Amino acid sequence: MKNKIDTNNKSNFCVERWVKKALCGGVALGLAMTMGATSVIAEVGGERSQGFGHMTPFSRVAKLPVVKVRGQIDYKATYNKARAASVAIATYVARMKEADMLGVDVIKGIDWKLGGTSKECLDTRVCTDDEIVHNVMQIPSPDPIDPNDATYVATGVVTPANTKKGNVIEFCNGKYAGMAMGVEPIIDGRTIANGYAHAPALPCEVSVWNDDQHIYVDMLDPSAIFTLFFSDVLFSADMQDPVFAEAMNAMPPQVKAEIVAIIYAALSEFDSDMKVMDQKIGPAYQSIEDIIKVVDDSPLDSPYLHMTYTKQDGGVFTETESKKVAQTIIDTMSIHGNADAGTHPTVINADGDTLDSILSPKSSWRSARTAPITIPGKNHIIEACSPKYAKMAMGTGLHHVNALPCEITVKIIDGGNKLIISYLDPAFMLGAMFADISEEDKARFGAIPGLINADLQKIVTAALDVNLGITLNAPERKVINMLP
Image (cartoon, rainbow, N blue to C red; front, side):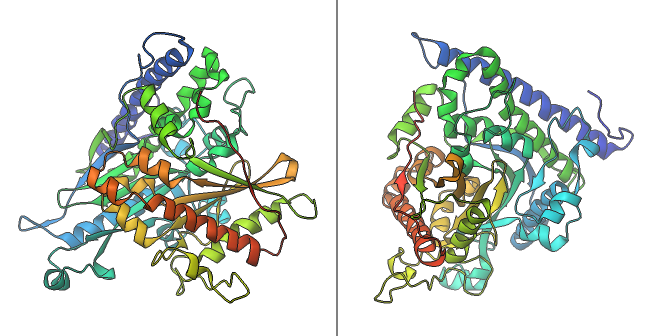
């Protein structure tokens, strides 16, 4: 492999070795996935799980040492270091062209971009520090940053200033997102069917967070995400063709290899004591039967809820209107960082009741971003977060942070005759991404997915019925079969 890296520099030499390790690991995983998926799907009888292997939704790719003073952990300094590490990764993604920095043999696709950044930043790579920092999301947990904080010691209450948060960076790549969304060919002009239906499963997410032992760098494992959230593709007739199947299964490990290479390059100068890892974390899936079961056990038999809308006047939707729908949902939900975040004053009926009166108590929903992220196929992604429910989820372990926030997508389909709004189903997310939590936590979460689902649909309904200014017919559910 030829890389554009100066091997006379010790730090760069380490990056080269890490990059090679990432890519070699990706190739091996791709081969394993190809053998497992194609043999399982093509097989009529016998052992369906043959060749599948062990898979988890989350992957730990690195860890950094905590900050210690005279042998004791400095909790605040460690927390700040975790934040700084996340910003270092985001800065690299936002400002660097990976093919130039790491070599064309390393990065096979179009350069990666930092999710949520402006068009100027995306086009020119001239991104301000403030914009980069703003686009590293922080998901709150119920834990304190510093357990020795005087208020926490005295009262046991975690104040806002002492609330530990996980940092989430979103990686976007036009080529791979286009392939996943069905607008770019997988091979020989062939695309996946209903690609837009998977939009809520994007973009790729990387998190940085700490406990009192280490600072961790985790990511959603692309091969696991493909298997769990693209099961309709996995079980499709296209995958009976070994050529298509090999090309399809090669994409997720290549995506992982590229993201891991970027992380290693970004953190190599940040902390020379970074430890490179490839550790599977979270719930384990041992067979194709496990995948089928988690989809089949979900209330919708799918990771997604798709609702379609038509205009009462029979007109077609324009892309301007599609963007307006997404932005109206965000504005109705309220926007994180604004003074009124979590407050929803929209009046929903003639009695003057507000949206807040029908949402679950203290849910305080808000959009993580001021505007939607648009990915290939003109899919507009809205990221919804409730501090209340986020803290409950993070109370089961911060390694789950990449499963948040809640995703809603907006897109025009059927030649403009319909608008489809899709949700990641909270019940599926609990069953698939949080399956490793305790039985006690599972019981405690019993009603929560339903509350989240209802809240998000009520927010969307209020946005469309009250704030949009376009008269729509009642929505209809679109069912896309995710199972064989």
